[in-house]
Amino acid sequence: MTSCAGNRERAVAAMALLGRGNDAAKLLDFMSDDDMKTISRLIGGYSKEPERERKMRQILKHLSSSDCFSSLADVHPAWILERLKLEPPRVVGIILRFLPSRHVRYLLKNLPPMLCEQIPNIVESFSVEPAVLETIRRRFESHFAPMRISRTIEELGLENLYYLKEFEIEELFKELGISEMAIALSGMGANVLKIIYNRLDVKDAKKLKAALDGMRNISPESYCEARRNFLSIDSEGLGSEKLLRSVGTAVFAGAIAREDSELLKLFSQKISPSTAYLLKRLVDENRMRANAAGVEKRKQTVLCALKKLAREGRIDEAFGGFEAKKEISPFAADIPSSVNPDEEPTRTLSQLA
Image (tube, rainbow, N blue to C red):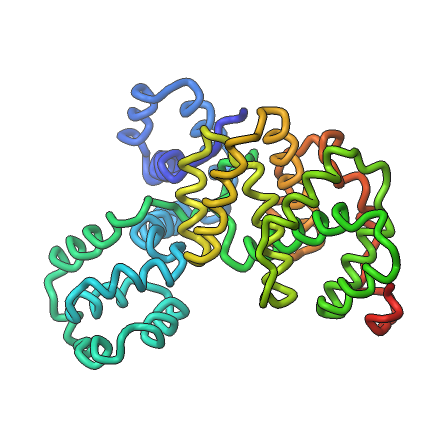
């Protein structure tokens, strides 16, 4: 795999182009061959930037701020909420300073009312010594696995999936859920399909029908696995969106091998606790019967779905760089990308059957 440019490599390359850059260049002697190649390539690219000096200072400032703001900003606020409940009000007020506004709104809405009333005014937290603020922040961050928000990578793989934002993960799970349901329902009669369509939102029902219409040559193994995933979800009381994402969670769980435990830990921080608990349960169940070929097949299924979502603009286009072996995906070749259910004339759910 090609060496990926991380924050460290970008920082060294930027410093090497500031002024004479002699001190930064000396660091290359202490780096591996891969790091040296990566930094040399970055230097070559950065050197072509107009107003290079100012641009390099901007890069360093951005890298510094991203490292300081990376961990908590990408953790799902529900996980942060559970930890904040154990902290004194003054610490809660300080931690809120380091969080994006969407997290703060969620936390203030869901923290115990008595605790919210005791949180000091934000002006008071600004009077705390910077060294103390930094110590409190780092101590609180230590409760979570460290994550970086930088997503500038050259070659994407499954190990990079924790870079996805929460809404992108939801889109991925939904896409996987629709495809898996299409496989599980292939061969069903019109009356059964009508019942399923009526349970979904019109937009989702149209996507499911488009997927079913495009099905070709589903293997018996894929068919049985899709039905097992569908039946592994307790669908009672679940709405359309949650049903599809729960089925998609089951598909994603099948792509997690034993050696992906760190990915599972990081990924779980990005999603709600309820979804994370479901994912972990499904991963544990899959590991009792999964084989290496089956896990690899599911990984390629996930990567194909990511490329499709990126191509359609539903997630960051950077994720179109995932390398997926389409020939071993159980459905990637069966659902034509040219089918766009949103462009079909609006029809009622009963007409979709």
